[in-house]
Image (cartoon, rainbow, N blue to C red):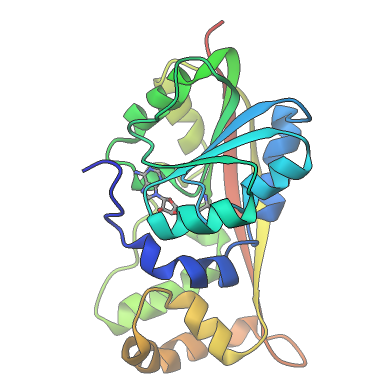
Length: 251
Ligand SMILES: C[S@@+](CC[C@H](N)C(=O)[O-])C[C@H]1O[C@@H](n2cnc3c(N)ncnc32)[C@H](O)[C@@H]1O
């Protein structure tokens, strides 16, 4: 049911925030620049996770709101951005009236909606006429070192790597927004690095959501696949990329 944490994000909220919460900051800054978000704007972050974007928006003087179906994520977001209006719920049914936001955005979240197009339509509903919708997601696998490691983990289980789907490749987000009847005004590829200072952090980050036994079993595969990404002096540096597209709602 929409609004429930079906994917279990609450159980990994703390580790998500610790290991992955900040890595999308370059994409967040790029979307803020592309949309012209600034002081006095009203901005909604759909699938706000542990609240890093909300905190960034608050520092800019934005009236920030966020929503997430995972109670653990909502609790962290409220702590990280105490002035933001953070609600429990999902992209499919946003508990705000029509036309109240200047910009609605979703980072690395819309792929979890039951119907992506319905989620975009709901974002449009709560955004003012002539406002902006920004959707940001992982770029296709070929851009992401993390996908090389995840492919090795999948292969160790006899599985195929998770396919890119419609949203990740170039033009995917633009097609989604155009299908929703919006005028695409910007699109970009942004490098997002992920670093791990040691083997333990690398394994916990890649195998987020696995229990201790699963992490111990998967560690040799992760460490071997990550060999090309080792840095001198220890630790790992993974180059990855996000894509975003921004579209204007009908005036
Ligand atoms: C990969 S995390 C990204 C969090 C945050 N946007 C960020 O970039 O750090 C995905 C988030 O989407 C949320 N999510 C899952 N299903 C959702 C849905 N149907 N609507 C909105 N958010 C959803 C999860 O609870 C989780 O917090």
